[in-house]
Image (cartoon, rainbow, N blue to C red; front, side, top):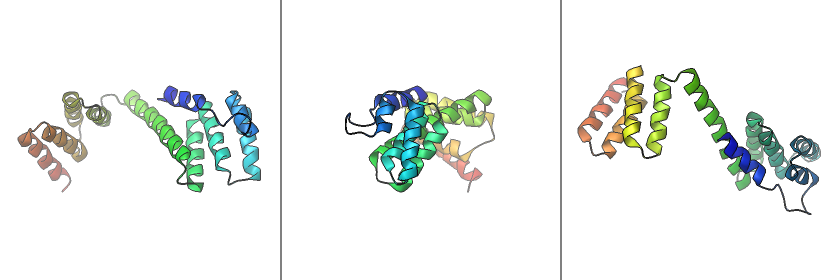
Length: 178
C-alpha cells in the first residue's frame, strides 16, 4: 500500500502549470523538501491556506513520512471538512498507516489470535469465506476466546446458510459478552 500511496501522491500534479504557486511547481518537479519548505512559508503567512497545507502533507508522504502526512491532512480536514482532496488523502494515508501496523502485528505475533482475526476479516472482505472461516477458527484456537471473532464466524456461517453452526457461534459470543 505504501508504494500505491506514494505513486498516487507523486503521479497527481499539484496544480495546473502556469497558474500554480511556486510550492506546487516545485512539488511537480520532484523537489519535495523544497516544496515542503515553500508550503510551510506560505502557511506562516496564511495559516488558513488549505491547498498549501495539502501540498505540505503530500510532500511529507512523498518523503515517506506518513505519520507527519496524516497529521497534516487531518489539520487540513479540520480547517475544511468538506474538501474532497483532503478527504481523499486522509483515507489513503490512513490506509498506508493501517497496512504498516498490520504488517507489524503479523511480524511480531504471526500466530496470535489477533493476527488470525485480521487475516480472517481481510479474507472475508475479499469474499474468500472458506479461508476466512479457517483463520477465524485459528484465532479461537490461539485464544483467548473472543466475542468479536465468534460473531464474525457466525456471520460467515449464516451467509453460507449454515444456521445451526451460526447460531452456536452467536450463542458462544453471547456467553462471553452478555
